[in-house]
Every structure is written in C-alpha cells, then in structure tokens.
Length: 303
Length: 310
Image 1 (cartoon, chains in turn red, brown):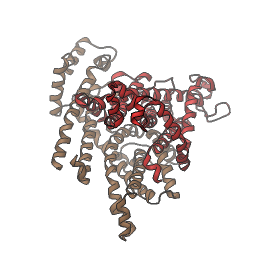
Image 2: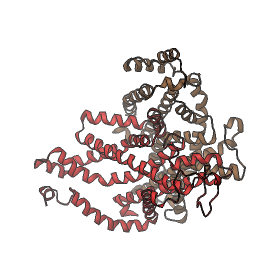
Image 3: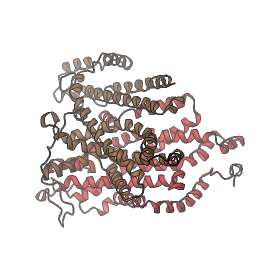
Image 4: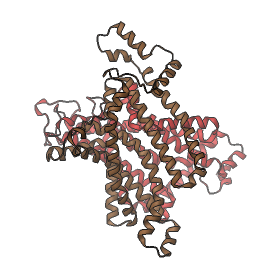
C-alpha cells in the first residue's frame, strides 16, 4: 500500500481499489438487478448488436451492394429472409452492415466525446478560474442549440459523410461529459485524500489522474452507455435526412429513407431497419439505466 | 431576491448569445467549397458570381463581416435566400407557425397523458399498471421519431386508410395533425412519464409525506397537493429543455408528413446549400430554445424560492 492509501484510510483512491470495489459492487449489482430484470435484458441486446457489427463481413448472407434486379421489392422469403429493396439488394445483409456502420459511428463519436469532454471538464473543474468560466461558456453555447439543428448545421458546413457524422456526434455530446467531469472534479477537489496527497507533495497532474479521475469513472461510464443510444439515434436521423452515411453504404437510417417510397407495397423495407434501431437503443438504454440504478446508493437502500 | 436572480440569468446569456451569433455568422464564411459556385450551378458567369460575392459580403474580413451581419439581424434583415429569392425572414415567418402548432399540440397531448400516467405509476409502484407503463415508456423512449411516424403511416394511412398521409392542417383539416402529433409526442410522453414517476417516487419518500398521512389527510390531498407539487419542479425544467429536442424532432416529423414547416425548410436549405437560409433558421431556433430555457429557469425560481438564494 502506498502512503496515500494509508492516509486516506477507506476511501478508494487508486485504480486498484477501483477494480476491487467494482468486484464487490458486481455482487451487489446482481442483487439489485434481480429486482429489476429489465435491465438484465439490456446488456445481451447491446452485446448482440456489437457482435453482429463486428462479424458483419462473415455473417452477412449477401454483399450489401449486390443487386438482383429480377427480384426487386420482394417480401421475406427463403432466399432473402427479410426481403429485398428496390434494387433487389438483400435487406438482412444490408441491416447487418448497417449495424456495423451505425455502431461504429456511435462508438467512435462517443469515444471522442468521452475522452475530450472528460479531459476538458476535469481540468476545468480542477483548476477553476477564468479557464473554467471560458470553457463552460463554450459548452453552454454548444448546448444552446437544439441538437438536431446543430447537427444539421454542422453537416451543412462540412458536408455529409460517415467521418463527418462522427465529428458532429463528438462535438454535440462533448459538453455532457465535460459538465459531468467538472462536477466530479469540483466535488472531489476538497476531499481529504486530495488534501493529504498534496501534503505529501503529489503534483496536480498526479492528483487529477490518480484520485479524481479514478473516482469519477462510474458516472462517466453510465453516461457513456446512455449517450451511445442517443448517438446511434443521431446518426440514424442524419442518414435518414440524407445528411449522414451516403448510399450505397447502408445505414439503418438511410434504409428507412429508401423505404419511404414503398410504404404501400413493400412496408418491410422501412420497418425492419427501424426495428433494429429501436432494439439497439433500447438495449443501451436499459443497460445504462440498470448501471445507474446499481450505482445510486439512495435507490439501493430503499427499494 | 427574484429580481437579482433573473438579472443574473439574463447577464449570463450575453456570452452565450455572442457565441451563437459568432458560430452562425461563420457558417457561410468558413464552409468549404464556394457557396456562390454551389448556388449558381454548373455554368456560372464570373461577373454574376463576383456580384453575388460582394452582395453577400464574402470578400470582407471576418470582424467587419460579423458586425455587418449583426447589424442586419437587429434590423430584422436575415438576408436573402440564394435559391428561393425571397427574403429569409419572410420564408421563416411563413413556415414557423406550422412548426409551432405541431410542437405545441404534440407537447400538450403528451403532457396530458404522461403526467397522470407517471403519477399513477409512482403511487401504485410495482403493481401491474406501473410495470406495464414503465415498459411502454422505455420502448417509447427508444423508438426513433421518424420510424414511429412511418409505422403510423403504414398502419393508419396505407393499410387502413383512415387518416391523411400528410400535408398541412390548413388544407386537410385537423385530422392531418393527428399522426404527426402522435409521432412527435410519443418520445416526449415516454420521457415525461419516466421523469414524473421518478420524481414522484422520490417526493413520496420524503418525511413530510409521512407527517401528512399521520395528520389524517385524505390520500388524494397528500399525493396531489404535497407530493405532486414538489415533484413538478424538476419536471418543469425538463420540459423546457425538451422543447429543443421537440424542435429537432419536428425536423424529422415534418419531412415524413410533408408539413410545410421550418424544420423541413432547414433540410431543404442544407440540400441546396442555401447558406443564408440555414443561418436564419439556425438563429431563430436557437434563440427560441435559449428563450424557452430562460423562461423555464425563471419559472423554476418562482415555484421553488430556494433556487433564487443561490
């Protein structure tokens, strides 16, 4: 044990004890989760979608751009389990590749937002002063646009493409992580083990990294899961409007847009991708909610 | 100290408004490619292009550009749409009412369903009613707005042709508002149901509720006058913030149901690289959003006096 742990006593102040407390909390987690079985459902759904996305080239029955013009807009059949679209492309395959597109965009966007946002928020909260004010004003400015409007305006500036959707998601989601990290930093700045660490000569950066970040990880992870759901939704919305992932690359959003012209004759083209989006978002939401319920000490005692 | 709180809130707005205006005014200047070229199309006359550039003021340095733009905005001049030829403010003024009607109808209907549902769910916690409504709310929150719209269209307009496929209520009557409102309102209703339930549950755990029961007050008074009023406070803030999400959802809903509102105008503007229009719409929507948040903040301080003491 290092000096900091001795001085701080019970408080978890390193990553080691973070993992230890995670193990302990996992046991508690099962207890809480079993009272709220819905959230147990969320994790397998999310994992399933991620696996599908990763294995797309392997499990996809047809290549996503292969057209079969003789069999356009067919309903579900043995050859095409979910039917074909107006170019005869297999919908199931396109949905599988769409999972890859949507999930990778969501993950990349949130990954960037989480990293940059947490860094900015933590530094801002810890050091305070005019830097803090300036950074928070910028975050406020980003948050003062309705997010789809901001997303659309940003796309107008940089043009529609997969990469730009990632950038847009990152920009629009960063303030949430920044605020969260800042709140954590502000709260933890004054706690005893930080004062103690300072007393033994720990540098500022050391404190931020070892103490403040380690103790703030859990709400950030919860936020990560919940914002992944919104990120997937944002990508789908942009692609639906034609401002996101461009055809022929399939995205669940642009598949729904494709299907709009065939609602009367071939409603499955638009229905199935939407089902996929809803299921995925539901999975991440349930999982994030379940995670939050576990980590909120107030709810644990009383329910 | 309500006045001080309000004054402080308004002063804090200034840097935000500054930032918003800077960003919006920069949209056209820093867009890659040449907006004039994009607007004029393939065979563009250098003479006309040069005139257009000067008219838009693209050749000026940024500071001057920004100040000129700001001056125009204060006078209500948002520029001229590159494609449509009308002034931006006319276009917006014409289409904004549709968006506002759609948004308010959706929010009202959603609130009328969601709040009672949330309260009932909290009061009868863990019963079948509660569990069903929680599941429904969870599903409602996870469905993309545009997919809900399309599903509703398939069922109610195509398979069983009961309701119109879209268009404005002006031409097709109030029936045309039904599907769009349900579409836009579903996600919002689901969220408010969840929020209402969770704030009510927390409120019901407070000690003053036990006191109220002990005093012998009838349950309805306890739940409504005491618990609900306190639970309402965070909900008010959420509703204000959600207004922005609703505006965003309106973009998608108007596209599906072919409603001639401001949301759809934005999408059309982006497709046609009509930057003055994009700027105008973004400016108007963000101003509305900021204003709505300010109103909600003030309302919050009025309802809960503790807030203004911070």
